[in-house]
Length: 171
Image 1: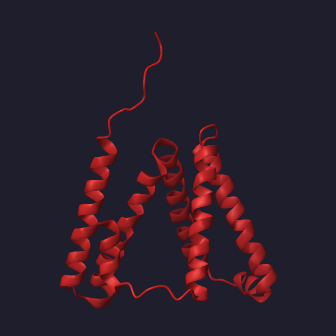
Image 2 (image 1 turned 60 degrees about the vertical axis):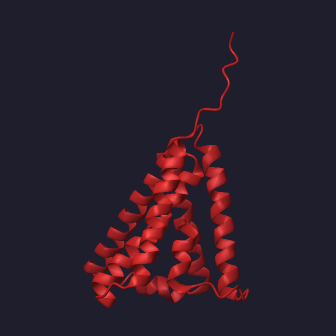
């Protein structure tokens, strides 16, 4: 249902293996690897430490890529206004809050449960788009929303009502 809800928006016309699709596939694989590593690290390291490392490493990679590929952009960024720096700071705070929440959730729940929450981002995007951009809501968005919400409810119920299959081996 979660997958069907996302397909309803634009349909699925197949893969063309374009540069964009391959980049998306690579990003998805890297993200999955990151979550596997994070899940293992979080067994012995605080989510706050993992967040600091992730944000620090991400910043270092982005700054290095910027310096290597378009160094003139870095010079322009030094001439930003106070308001622009404010919104950059606000964006950084939102990203920090998201990343901290993500790693805290990943420490305490299975990765599949934590990632399922991201499906709801489609709903949020559609609602904001309907309010601020298109100023309309249509049947397709309603069908998609119902499918996604139903899928999320079913998924959350199935993950919370699983029986404990661990066997007590103490005598």
